[in-house]
Image 1 (cartoon, rainbow over the protein chains, first blue to last red):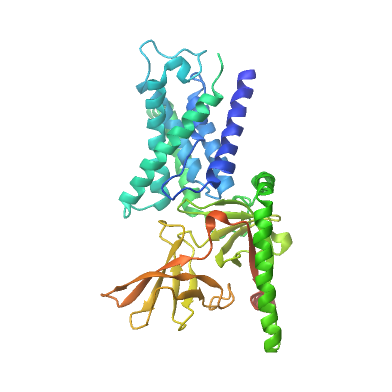
Image 2: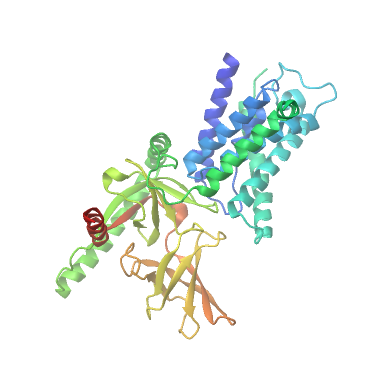
Length: 168
Length: 269
């Protein structure tokens, strides 16, 4: 129960940080940070994969409602939730995941988290930026946005991951 | 039948994902940027109220700065009013009305940007009203709820407004390519026109959304397309979208009357 409340809190904190702070900051059109996918990344390993899909969708939809981008982040959140299952398999440690251990750097290490996070971030950003421009005409421009924003997102996600992760 | 069921069970996860994804994409591609009702945009009651509360906290920190800016604008308007008084031009019939609002949320470094403000239908906001700020044109109202409205700024790929060169009145349309928040593209100006760097660009007044002559920006650079003999002009925008605190939506009384009589005519049929 306490655990469920914790993840509800993660959801709210990350949604509000995304929409009220990150979305309002303007550095450059090349730099957009997305922290809300951290919620999908950190869901417990034993979470039902259908539930992960629905939660990814719900998170994306909530971001959409704040930013008037109906469908954009909903589809991206869903995609990240879908890919998460395979990314977790791909980067599975030698002795597998343990159900009572949170998916964080303390339990599985920085190298593991970095690969897991950057995979999901890149897929998410490629999807978002190509869907938004919906053309391959400015492909270099869009790729530059994906690259720079991914680095920014990775830094922000790392920060919030360290802030939010369980103390034990 | 049995095989089909087996298939569905085996790939249920994948099928569910594809179905939901298609649903999201349908939402994304079918959503008309101009929505009469704002529940599916940031103008909805919940996100609007949260953003407004938060904006209240943030704005509190910039109050003195904002006050200063408003004072300056006030003084400028007083000066202009004085000039009108002296010129003894009879006051023109008031065709346009301004509705003030504060910005509660704004994205500016996206491809499809949006601005949410704390005035909605109750304050007289309507979809497709023009919106200006302290320095010039901001955008067009794209969806409205009772208490909030979403504005599609000029820095949105679907936004198009009719503009002209203040100097000689040659007009064209202004659009944005997603690259630079301070620069928009003014096209359709014929190649024989004398364009100079620094020339002011203002609204043309053809669309009934904006009054004529609202400042938009100035010519930053231009290029002539030799095959079509039209200019492509880069316009440096006066409005700094990074730093926009309050706006005025413009109600065109003629347009409203026109619409009302239109509706009447429809009913009488």
